[in-house]
Length: 214
Ligand code: E4P
Image (cartoon, rainbow, N blue to C red; front, side):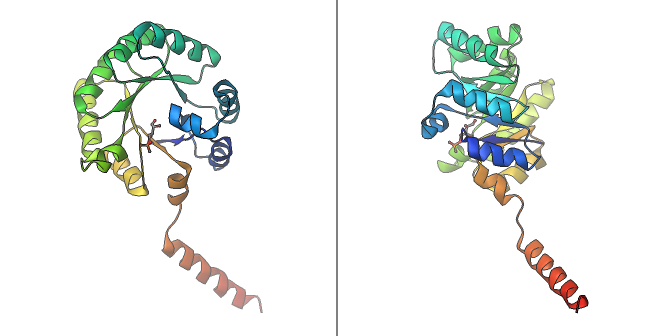
Protein backbone atom coordinates (compact mmCIF):
# COMPACT_ATOMS: atom_id res chain seq x y z
CA UNK A 1 0.00 0.00 0.00
CA UNK A 2 1.29 3.44 -0.90
CA UNK A 3 1.75 6.08 1.80
CA UNK A 4 0.92 9.72 1.03
CA UNK A 5 1.12 12.62 3.46
CA UNK A 6 -1.96 14.83 3.74
CA UNK A 7 -0.53 18.28 4.40
CA UNK A 8 0.77 21.46 2.77
CA UNK A 9 3.42 21.95 5.46
CA UNK A 10 6.88 21.91 3.86
CA UNK A 11 8.46 21.04 7.22
CA UNK A 12 6.22 17.96 7.64
CA UNK A 13 6.68 16.88 4.01
CA UNK A 14 10.46 17.17 4.34
CA UNK A 15 10.44 15.15 7.56
CA UNK A 16 8.16 12.44 6.15
CA UNK A 17 10.23 12.21 2.94
CA UNK A 18 13.42 11.77 4.99
CA UNK A 19 11.95 8.52 6.39
CA UNK A 20 12.25 6.99 2.90
CA UNK A 21 8.69 5.62 2.99
CA UNK A 22 6.74 8.45 1.38
CA UNK A 23 5.11 7.84 -2.02
CA UNK A 24 3.18 11.08 -2.54
CA UNK A 25 1.38 14.14 -1.17
CA UNK A 26 -2.23 15.30 -1.03
CA UNK A 27 -3.24 18.90 -0.33
CA UNK A 28 -6.61 20.61 -0.15
CA UNK A 29 -7.67 24.28 0.04
CA UNK A 30 -8.02 24.14 3.84
CA UNK A 31 -4.52 22.67 4.31
CA UNK A 32 -3.06 25.28 1.93
CA UNK A 33 -4.86 28.13 3.73
CA UNK A 34 -3.45 26.91 7.05
CA UNK A 35 0.11 27.50 5.79
CA UNK A 36 -0.68 31.07 4.65
CA UNK A 37 1.73 30.94 1.69
CA UNK A 38 1.45 31.34 -2.08
CA UNK A 39 -0.07 28.13 -3.55
CA UNK A 40 2.18 28.01 -6.63
CA UNK A 41 5.37 28.59 -4.64
CA UNK A 42 4.25 25.93 -2.17
CA UNK A 43 3.65 23.42 -4.98
CA UNK A 44 7.10 24.09 -6.47
CA UNK A 45 8.68 23.38 -3.08
CA UNK A 46 6.68 20.17 -2.58
CA UNK A 47 7.52 18.95 -6.09
CA UNK A 48 11.21 19.49 -5.42
CA UNK A 49 11.07 17.35 -2.26
CA UNK A 50 8.86 14.43 -3.35
CA UNK A 51 9.22 12.50 -6.60
CA UNK A 52 5.69 11.09 -6.62
CA UNK A 53 2.08 12.16 -7.17
CA UNK A 54 1.20 15.55 -5.65
CA UNK A 55 -2.53 16.34 -5.54
CA UNK A 56 -3.48 20.00 -6.05
CA UNK A 57 -7.14 20.94 -5.86
CA UNK A 58 -9.15 23.17 -8.20
CA UNK A 59 -11.35 25.89 -6.73
CA UNK A 60 -13.77 26.24 -9.68
CA UNK A 61 -17.03 24.29 -9.50
CA UNK A 62 -18.16 24.64 -13.15
CA UNK A 63 -16.98 22.43 -16.04
CA UNK A 64 -15.08 25.14 -17.97
CA UNK A 65 -13.51 26.57 -14.83
CA UNK A 66 -12.38 23.16 -13.56
CA UNK A 67 -10.88 22.36 -16.98
CA UNK A 68 -8.99 25.67 -17.10
CA UNK A 69 -7.59 25.33 -13.57
CA UNK A 70 -6.91 21.63 -14.04
CA UNK A 71 -4.94 22.17 -17.27
CA UNK A 72 -2.94 24.98 -15.64
CA UNK A 73 -2.10 22.81 -12.63
CA UNK A 74 -1.18 19.80 -14.79
CA UNK A 75 1.16 21.96 -16.88
CA UNK A 76 3.27 22.77 -13.79
CA UNK A 77 4.84 19.31 -13.47
CA UNK A 78 4.35 15.70 -14.58
CA UNK A 79 3.71 14.63 -10.95
CA UNK A 80 0.75 16.95 -10.42
CA UNK A 81 -2.57 15.17 -9.90
CA UNK A 82 -5.55 17.47 -10.35
CA UNK A 83 -7.94 17.15 -7.43
CA UNK A 84 -11.57 17.63 -8.43
CA UNK A 85 -14.68 17.61 -6.20
CA UNK A 86 -17.21 14.84 -6.68
CA UNK A 87 -19.98 16.90 -8.28
CA UNK A 88 -21.59 16.55 -11.73
CA UNK A 89 -19.49 19.30 -13.30
CA UNK A 90 -16.43 17.81 -11.65
CA UNK A 91 -16.91 14.35 -13.13
CA UNK A 92 -17.61 15.85 -16.57
CA UNK A 93 -14.29 17.66 -16.30
CA UNK A 94 -12.53 14.48 -15.09
CA UNK A 95 -13.70 12.69 -18.23
CA UNK A 96 -12.18 15.42 -20.43
CA UNK A 97 -8.99 15.78 -18.39
CA UNK A 98 -8.39 12.04 -18.35
CA UNK A 99 -8.86 11.88 -22.15
CA UNK A 100 -6.06 14.49 -22.34
CA UNK A 101 -3.78 12.32 -20.19
CA UNK A 102 -4.13 14.48 -17.06
CA UNK A 103 -4.09 12.53 -13.78
CA UNK A 104 -7.06 13.24 -11.51
CA UNK A 105 -7.99 12.64 -7.88
CA UNK A 106 -11.73 12.83 -7.24
CA UNK A 107 -12.24 14.14 -3.73
CA UNK A 108 -15.05 14.42 -1.18
CA UNK A 109 -16.38 10.93 -1.91
CA UNK A 110 -18.83 9.62 0.69
CA UNK A 111 -20.75 6.84 -1.12
CA UNK A 112 -20.05 3.76 -3.27
CA UNK A 113 -22.30 5.13 -6.03
CA UNK A 114 -20.18 8.28 -6.22
CA UNK A 115 -17.02 6.15 -6.39
CA UNK A 116 -18.41 4.04 -9.23
CA UNK A 117 -19.24 7.17 -11.24
CA UNK A 118 -15.74 8.58 -10.66
CA UNK A 119 -14.19 5.35 -11.98
CA UNK A 120 -16.45 5.44 -15.04
CA UNK A 121 -15.35 9.05 -15.64
CA UNK A 122 -11.74 7.85 -15.75
CA UNK A 123 -10.44 9.16 -12.41
CA UNK A 124 -6.88 8.09 -11.56
CA UNK A 125 -7.71 8.14 -7.82
CA UNK A 126 -10.88 8.22 -5.73
CA UNK A 127 -10.64 9.80 -2.26
CA UNK A 128 -13.26 8.46 0.17
CA UNK A 129 -13.14 10.37 3.50
CA UNK A 130 -13.34 7.77 6.28
CA UNK A 131 -12.83 10.02 9.31
CA UNK A 132 -15.55 12.47 8.33
CA UNK A 133 -18.00 9.56 7.98
CA UNK A 134 -16.98 8.16 11.38
CA UNK A 135 -17.50 11.67 12.80
CA UNK A 136 -21.21 11.47 11.91
CA UNK A 137 -21.56 7.89 13.21
CA UNK A 138 -21.32 6.20 9.78
CA UNK A 139 -18.82 3.41 9.15
CA UNK A 140 -16.04 4.95 7.03
CA UNK A 141 -14.19 1.66 6.53
CA UNK A 142 -17.32 -0.06 5.27
CA UNK A 143 -17.30 2.44 2.43
CA UNK A 144 -13.72 1.43 1.57
CA UNK A 145 -14.70 -2.27 1.52
CA UNK A 146 -17.61 -1.52 -0.80
CA UNK A 147 -15.57 0.59 -3.20
CA UNK A 148 -12.72 -1.96 -3.37
CA UNK A 149 -15.28 -4.72 -4.07
CA UNK A 150 -17.05 -2.72 -6.80
CA UNK A 151 -13.77 -1.78 -8.51
CA UNK A 152 -12.68 -5.45 -8.40
CA UNK A 153 -16.02 -6.59 -9.86
CA UNK A 154 -15.51 -4.45 -12.95
CA UNK A 155 -11.71 -4.28 -13.02
CA UNK A 156 -11.62 -0.47 -12.75
CA UNK A 157 -8.07 0.89 -12.68
CA UNK A 158 -8.96 3.88 -10.46
CA UNK A 159 -6.85 3.68 -7.29
CA UNK A 160 -8.62 3.79 -3.92
CA UNK A 161 -6.92 6.55 -1.91
CA UNK A 162 -8.19 6.37 1.66
CA UNK A 163 -8.44 9.92 3.01
CA UNK A 164 -9.46 11.69 6.21
CA UNK A 165 -7.48 9.17 8.25
CA UNK A 166 -7.50 9.88 11.97
CA UNK A 167 -5.45 7.08 13.59
CA UNK A 168 -3.23 4.03 12.88
CA UNK A 169 -6.17 1.60 12.97
CA UNK A 170 -7.63 3.27 9.87
CA UNK A 171 -4.28 2.60 8.12
CA UNK A 172 -4.26 -1.09 9.12
CA UNK A 173 -7.91 -1.64 8.19
CA UNK A 174 -7.36 0.01 4.80
CA UNK A 175 -4.40 -2.32 4.16
CA UNK A 176 -6.42 -5.41 5.18
CA UNK A 177 -9.17 -4.42 2.76
CA UNK A 178 -6.58 -3.94 0.00
CA UNK A 179 -6.88 -0.19 -0.62
CA UNK A 180 -4.18 1.20 -2.91
CA UNK A 181 -3.13 4.31 -0.97
CA UNK A 182 -3.55 5.90 2.47
CA UNK A 183 -3.07 9.63 2.87
CA UNK A 184 -2.43 10.71 6.46
CA UNK A 185 -1.41 13.73 8.50
CA UNK A 186 2.18 13.61 9.76
CA UNK A 187 0.95 12.93 13.30
CA UNK A 188 -0.59 9.61 12.17
CA UNK A 189 2.44 8.56 10.08
CA UNK A 190 4.59 9.18 13.15
CA UNK A 191 2.40 6.92 15.33
CA UNK A 192 2.73 3.97 12.90
CA UNK A 193 6.28 3.32 14.12
CA UNK A 194 5.40 2.98 17.78
CA UNK A 195 4.80 -0.01 20.03
CA UNK A 196 5.44 -0.03 23.81
CA UNK A 197 6.92 -3.57 23.61
CA UNK A 198 9.46 -2.33 21.06
CA UNK A 199 10.50 0.43 23.46
CA UNK A 200 10.72 -1.79 26.56
CA UNK A 201 12.39 -4.62 24.60
CA UNK A 202 15.04 -2.29 23.20
CA UNK A 203 15.66 -0.78 26.63
CA UNK A 204 16.28 -4.27 28.05
CA UNK A 205 18.57 -5.31 25.18
CA UNK A 206 20.68 -2.20 25.65
CA UNK A 207 20.90 -2.48 29.45
CA UNK A 208 21.85 -6.20 29.21
CA UNK A 209 24.51 -5.35 26.63
CA UNK A 210 25.84 -2.63 28.92
CA UNK A 211 26.46 -5.30 31.63
CA UNK A 212 28.75 -7.24 29.27
CA UNK A 213 30.93 -4.16 28.81
CA UNK A 214 32.11 -4.02 32.46
C1 E4P B 1 -7.96 14.25 1.36
O1 E4P B 1 -7.31 14.36 0.36
C2 E4P B 1 -8.23 15.34 2.30
O2 E4P B 1 -7.21 16.30 2.15
C3 E4P B 1 -8.18 14.93 3.74
O3 E4P B 1 -7.81 13.59 3.93
C4 E4P B 1 -9.33 15.39 4.57
O4 E4P B 1 -9.09 15.02 5.91
P1 E4P B 1 -9.86 15.68 7.14
O5 E4P B 1 -11.22 15.08 7.21
O6 E4P B 1 -9.03 15.29 8.33
O7 E4P B 1 -9.89 17.16 6.89
